[in-house]
Length: 108
Image 1: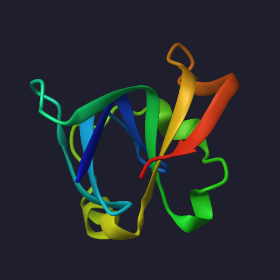
Image 2 (image 1 turned 180 degrees about the vertical axis):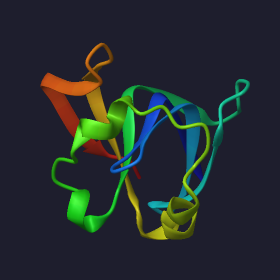
Image 3 (image 1 turned 90 degrees about the horizontal axis):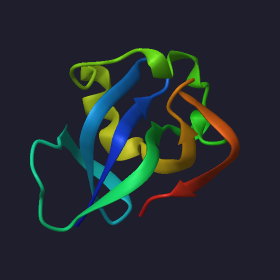
């Protein structure tokens, strides 16, 4: 089991959650929860973690990245095992968009 935390967790078409943890097992997302305190075996990553479906996996549309969410959308919770987590870093937090140097890295 691995845990990753970041400044923002992005859901294409919905928006971003601030300071959340993505818990993964064998490359699959199994749980998302708020980062309220330091948690053992959690890796802090700079940038944005995006949970993407197969159709979004190339470069997601970050248009809604500025929408601040307070909870995980209900239909996302149902889809967690089919989503893939990617780190986009570095990320421009002023414009809430990737910058020229942004690289996409799959999280396993």
